[in-house]
Image (cartoon, rainbow, N blue to C red; front, side):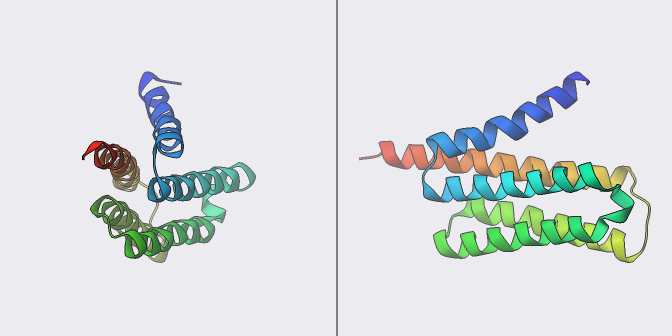
Length: 137
């Protein structure tokens, strides 16, 4: 495992963990959505090869984006809308690759990493803003 992989793994674990511990209800729900989607993706990848589970992964991505949409409508925070937008964009790219039967390339990996980075950054912003709102008089 390279240093970059270790950092990414640490971020994928640490940011949702901090959101679950230090966040309020919207942050906790968003962290649970992220953890469940990531866990479902990893679990399905452990049982099947990627070429066999394209539809399953697309469904997981779509359910995550839809769950974040419901959360964004319910709580009306910009950071949730950013999460939803990132996952919706990634869902569209994933659907395009699947529909066109394109092989996964660097552009797909970059879009996946950008979407994950935006989701984690948005979640961190959500935790920071909830703690900042709590401190204000």
